[in-house]
Structures are given as structure tokens and as C-alpha cells.
Image (cartoon, rainbow, N blue to C red):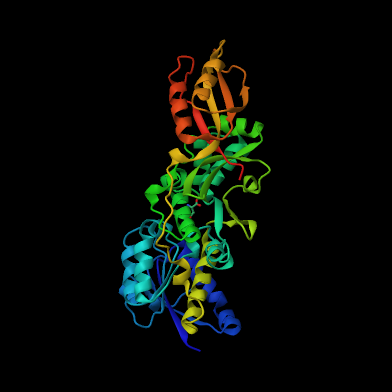
Length: 432
Ligand code: HSE
């Protein structure tokens, strides 16, 4: 049995988790799967801080070439994160014909094409299960399990931080900034939470998933991204009264003529399974003709779930190294030449929840509905709440399907009415 040598770059939380899992499972992999793994080198800037796992000090180094250039090493595991120098480390490992395992969603979303193409040229593979959904094996499911399907839609709650914040706001009735502070105190949100709460992390992940589903390049700049910063407690409450929850959804849809890929807060019926995904959990709802609907649920981050995904990639690659004809991942992840256009947000059609802050006097609703009517937007239901501030009332309207472009024009006209006092709020509604 040939020993498969592993080199790790990045001995942080996930790296430490991966080493723990390997230490525990290496005998099992050898006994049950016939795979003999050896962790040969670990590179990190910090080699002094003690980690909560015992390792042979000789394998610890600050010199990345001991991982990426060592001819003995078969698989390089990149857990550094960020674009640079992670990209350079991966390209150097590929140059030296090493397979790569990475959890780096930002890098794959930004530079995936270059990396996958180079890996293919070099005859090696890049595996990335840990980049989306932590311990949920969604990448493998899309690549292998659903290979007979034409994926039509994916709806994902793929940012635990945002889902935690929205859950807290809804359950505890607290404001966004209070829920964010709580998420930071618990270590779910970063000190600088922009990537999460502005929807960028979800966009990175849906870019990776939609590339796999639709087999084409998904440039990040073609993804519409709106975060959760502007979600107010009152919108969560009104949505609740109307039978909806508000979730940050990452959406990828195939229509007959184009693709829609977007990330934004979304009203979902409360009885939908995704509405019941609470706290830091992640979930992915997949729709395709053969399987109908499938739901994946689990921990989308954290040391051990993510380490579980990394180790599963290592095992796939180790099997491939031992039996090279078995798994040709490159073919399954290859993109098509013929691409469908990715439509802009202006071109989508959706139902909308809209909230106006209106003066409480005669004919206000008539003015608002006249503008909606002018743009072909049909009202489904209206609620007006009691006065809070003097003479200003929230008016909540649910619409039928409308064109986004028309909704934007209507809202900017409505916001210019003298009877409308604050910028109106619009949130897309999905029936899934
Ligand atoms: N920051 C991510 C989240 C976890 O909040 O879900 C890593 O992907």
C-alpha cells in the first residue's frame, strides 16, 4: 500500500481540526479503506503557539516550500484563506503536480477559472468541499450524486452569521445592531463583519455552487448582492404577521433563456423548510427534475464540521491517486463553451413586500396605488398599522409578480410624494 503524503498550509482553527481528525481516523482509513496517509509537513507563520493537538515538532515549518515544493508530498491542503498568498501557494503546488484541497471560497469565486484550468493542464485536481456549507457534503452531491440531473434551482442559507442575526432579531425582538453585537460576542461574526452581513460571503459560495450546477463561468460581478444591514425589526414583525420569515437567501435559478444568481434578504413562507433553519445552521434546497426537491441541512462552519469536509476531500484524492482511472473530477467540474446569459437584477420578476411610511390622511393609498398601477404592479394585500409617530403610519403592501425594473421606478416615484416620509423598503418574496 503506497503512503499518500499530505502537506498542510495554515495551522489555524480548521487546520488544527483537520490534524485532530486525521490522527484519530488514520488507522481506520488504512484498515477499512486501504488508504495510508501521512501528514508530512505543516506550514504556518506562527509555529510557537501551542495547538490543542499533539504533533511531531519536526513537521512544523514557516517555509512554505517544504509543502509545495517537496516531491514527496502528494496532496497540499490550503487553509490559509484570503486571496494572497493563498493563490500563489496553490498555483505553485499545482505547478509541482500536487493535488490541492482548499476551503477558500473567496479565492475560488474570484479566481476559480484560472485555478481549475491550470490544474487540468497539470493533470491534477482541486477539491473544495469545505468551501460551501461546512460539514454539509453539497459539492459532492452536486458533482456526483446529482450527476444525472439538470439542476433547476438552488436556494441556500449559506451564511451562518446572517442567519444567526436574523433568528435573534425574530426570536428576541432585538434590533440588528444588538443581534450583530451578540453574534460578535459569541465568536460567530468577525470584528469586521462586512463580508458576512453585506452578503459577499454568500455570493462567493453561490458562485461556486452555480458553476457546478450550470457548468459555466459565474463572474462575481454578475451576481446581485444585497446584505441584511437594512433589515429592521419592524419588517421582521410585519413579515411574521403575514406568515413569512425573512432569510438571507442565495439563489441560483436556470430559466429557459438565462440564469439568475443573486443574494438578498427574502420573505419565505413560514411553513417552508428553509424558514425553520435557525441560528448559525446552513441549509441548501435543491430542485431538479429527477430528484424533485432535496434539502441539505447542517453546520455551515466551525472547526470539526469544516475539518470533516477537508478530510473527505483528502480521501477522494487519495483514492484517485491509488486508482487513477476511478474518479475524473476535472471532467465533472469542467465548464461548457456555450453559456447562458446571467440576467441582471432589473430583469427578474418577483413578488414584493413593500413598506411605506406615509402620512395618515385621505387619498394617500390612492396615490401610492396609482403609481404602482402605472408600472403594472398589482397589489395582493395591504395592511396599515396604527399610528406610532404623529400622523405617520407604516403601510405594508404585498404585490403579485412584478418586474424589478418597474418596482424600482415605482418606488422612486412614490418616495417623491410629499405624503411619504421615509425611504420605502422593498423585500423580494419567494414561494420556492
Ligand atoms: N463566515 C461564514 C458564516 C462561515 O458566517 O457562515 C465560513 O464560511
